[in-house]
Structures are given as C-alpha cells and as structure tokens.
Image (cartoon, rainbow, N blue to C red; front, top):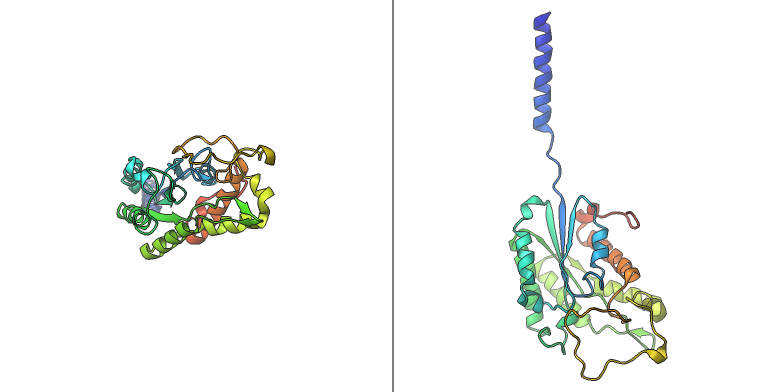
Length: 265
C-alpha cells in the first residue's frame, strides 16, 4: 500500500515539475514613447489622450514638448532621455517611439526652424535610425493639421513637411501614421464651425478676434490659454488621439491588442 502511495506521489510531483517547465512565462508589456511638439504634448495636444487608450498593463510616456522642432528637441538634450529609456528595452516586448515634428520646423521660428530640403529630412531619418539601433520600433507621424479655413477651404501649410516624413518613412522602411492626411480630410469635412470646437478655448466673437501683432515671435513652449486653430482641448485631444490609435493599428497590426476600446476606462 505504502509503495502504491509513493508511486502516485512521485507521479504527481513529476507532472507538476513538467507543467512548470512547459508553462510559458507571462508576456512582457509593451511600451510607447511619444516624441513631438505642442500638438502632441500634455495640455495642448492629443498625446495624453492617446496614452489613456493604452491598456494599463502596458506603458505610455509622453515626452512631447511645446515649441520643439526636429532640431531643437535634440539640441536641448531631450532626445537623450529617449535614448536612456531605450537602453532598458529588454524589459518590454516592444518599444514603439512615435515621432511627430513639422510645426516648429517651419520658417520664422528662431532657434527652431530647420531647412526643409536638408536638415529636416536628415533629422527625421536620424531619429528613426537611432531608435532601431537601440532595439526600438520607430513610427513616424505626419504633423497634425492646423484648422484655419479660407473661403471654406482648409489650408494645409504643413503638407511639404508631411511629404518629407512620408518619404523618410519609406526610405527607412519604418511604419508611418499619416495623421496630416487623416486630420486634414476630417477637418475639411466638418467645416470651420465644428472644427473650432476642438480648440483649447471657445471661439471669441469675430469682432473680438485679434490678429497677431506684426513681427511678433511665438515663444517656444509658451502656455496656450486662448483660442487658436493649432492646439486642441479635451474634445480635440480625444478626437485626434482616436485617429492616431486607428492609424497605429493599421500600420503596426501587432500593436492592436495594446489598446482599450474607445470609451473604455
């Protein structure tokens, strides 16, 4: 009898040991790092709303900062923080770095503007290359459209910068989120009145809308508290973050499982 019990006990132990050996370890989490300007940054862009769509089991870090261009973000040492984070990528199944610039690379912004034909494409390509070299997945994002209409037609003065990002993504063979094309089409379809509800503050009466003073230079990273047609409030952040999530699912299908359903807390 004792030998029979011993036999079953030994068999049970063997089965438990075998199960332990064959049970796969828990899946590592996914990490997302956002790099960009004020249209992605906290309090003025869609980045935090995007991070809110990422499942809690994963990590989303919004490092976008207002007033930064593809050149000044690196010059200020902010890219160093991204590289430091990427050196710890082994703890994650994948680290996606979403990179969106263009607004502050345009002419007329001292200390930030970059040359469209030389500096800007070189900067974007370098970001993609360095993310790959550190084991991350670079995802280039074309700039969020501004929402200024002329004769009921939405202007797209960011298209040349979007074109460079599209070409860079193709050349570097990295995923592209064409936010400029998506947001332009959506804002054109909704019209000026509806588009103005996406801003950080309500639209003032037309008689009270003041044109910017001639020669006035925008301060890099200055807080945006009044109505404008570049930055977004809570409604705009939710609207465009959902757009970016859907683009991400299409461009990087394996990332689809890391997002909550729209409206899920």
